[in-house]
Each structure stands twice: as structure tokens, then as C-alpha cells.
Image 1: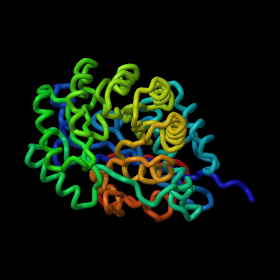
Image 2 (image 1 turned 90 degrees about the vertical axis):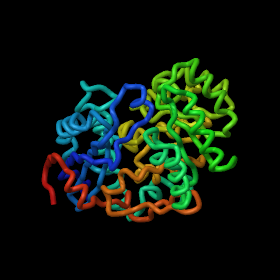
Image 3 (image 1 turned 180 degrees about the vertical axis):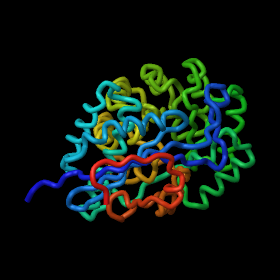
Image 4 (image 1 turned 180 degrees about the horizontal axis):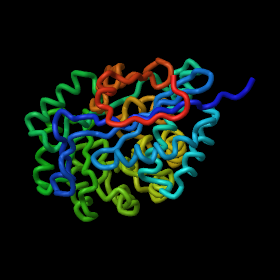
Length: 376
């Protein structure tokens, strides 16, 4: 029987509005403005044999139009390719845009195609993506971030933690790293008291400390029994993160801003993380994510994927070491389906592929589309 082939591709640029402007430490230090929307890049792939797949990438603040433009330029290179040969397809797209580099926006655009091909492959097999990859578990422990941003007043923060726990969330993450470090300590102390000593609690400084401040704050936070301190330093400072990881009892987590396997490898080989936090869309899709995960497993690290829970729940289910998945409600309006929470864990969907379909709102929020080949 002849090989199947990619016959149609549709790209969709969607502007997802956020109900409340979002502020973390980057905003309070003046480096960024509050975030009001997320730029989503969807890729729908169709094959000659009638199979379909849906892929996603994204950008917060600037970058969305650039991702879409790059994806539109390289998309024709995928037409005619066998959708089963996903690694080959990734290389084809990478070489099509090689002048733009092998990290950053260039690979984030490839991520949408790569996820779509994996979704197609799993749907064709009648399996969830987790099962196709070889699931180790049918649920994954999860923690909530969306209720712990710095624009949230402390009393509302406590209400958000109660609401998250009632929904079945298994951990709470707070944003820190604001100019007044005493306020960080006050908020973390109050939330720890509210949650009790044993409930999983994490903090995230969003790269806003220098090395001396990160060491001082890390030692101050030791008494709060945190699961991790996330991004205490600049995202590319592997040596600085390694020094913190060696000196602190509290584990160090980082990796969400890294956009290639090579950048992750730099952190792994230098011991720059206890928890590694790859983001599949940011590293170029599922294909490079699996490479990062294999390297991390070999080094004895735990994976805690960043954002995009609708995708990462499947990848986390296939990891050997028990991971954490970040629970964000932000992307939920884009899809008709919802993930289920129970007893601190997120259940892995059993529908074929990612188990996702675009909602009417996703279509309404579409700003630009591009089609290639023959679309059904």
C-alpha cells in the first residue's frame, strides 16, 4: 500500500483575551507591562487517507504575528510528506527556516506542526497521545499557578487557594520576586500558614533576582518547606542556578524559557535544576520535548512541564518519574473539552489523540488564517 501524505494544512492565529491583566515580578520591576492576551498558533493537518491532527504553539506578549508569519513561510515544505515520519518532518521544517535559527521563534512555529502530526498519528491509531507514547499512569499530580499572581491582593490569594483545593488541585504556586522582598516573605508566610505545613507549595521569581539576592531569598524560604523555587535567576544562567541547587535544601526549578534541546542540555550537564520545566511548544513540539525528557531522566531530574496543560498532561503521563503538571485555566475557552481533577491529580484524557477540538470562541478570536494544499 502506498504511503499516506500530507495534503492540506491550515494555520490559524488566535488572540486569546485574558479576563484580568496579569502581573508577575517582571511587571513590578518595570521590565514588562501587564499581559492582556495570549497569541495562539493552531495548525490543522490533513492527510490523503483522511486523517487529521490539531497542533498548538503560543506566545505571550510579543511574538505571535512573527510565529504565524514563519509558520506560513515553511508550511509548504510539509506538503507531500508522510505524516508518520514525524522526526523527518521536523527536520524538513527546520531546514526550511534554517536562516532564522534553531531556537526561539523559529522552532516555536515548528512546534504547532509537530504537535499536529503526533495528534494525527494517535487519532489514526485510535489511542490517546499518552497511550501512543506509552503511558505510565492514568492521572498526574497537578498544581495551580493562575491564582497566585502578584496583582492578586493577599486576601484574594487565600480565597483562590481554597477554590483551587476544592476543585481537586494538588499544589499551589505563588509568584515572588517583587522589589520589596519583605512583601514576598509576608505573602508566602501567610499562604503557608493558611495551607498548613504539608500541602505542596511552590514559588516562582520569574528571573528577577541576581545571584546574591537569590541565595539570600532561597535561604530565607527554607523554613516554608517548598516543593521548589522557580526561575530565581536569568533563564540562561545555568552556572548560577547550579550554585543555588548545590547550596539550598529547597529544590531549584527552571527551563520554561528555554527554546531548544541544546539549551536544556546545558542546564542538565551543569546541574542547574532539580526540577526541569520544558515547554513542548517552546522547544519545537513533542519530538524535541521527548529528547529533553530522556536526558533529564538519565540525569535523575524530575520533569514539571510549563503551561499548556491540555498538551502536557499526555506527555507527563508517559514519563517514568512522577512529574508535576501546571494547571492553568487560561486556554480552556479555546476547546470544547475540559480536563478532570480529582484528589490533587489531573486525569489523562482517553479520547483519541490530544482529545481536543476547537471551540466557537477560538474561531471567533481568529485574526488571520492561511491554507495550503487541499483542505476538507
